[in-house]
Length: 75
Image (cartoon, rainbow, N blue to C red; front, side, top):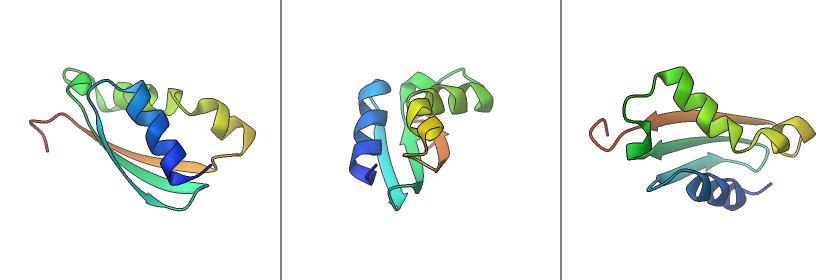
């Protein structure tokens, strides 16, 4: 899975998000900014994001995804 594919999946799945990616296709990190994260705990944010790529992680197509999440105010 390419960085562009991961980024598109996250942007499509998280409303009003800005996603920046680093790494390679199977080991990457994402910084995601979205008002959707307002009021959510860190764990809830992680679950929301990782739920969007759980099948790719399970299949091994995406080996690891490190996630940092922020609301626009936290940026």
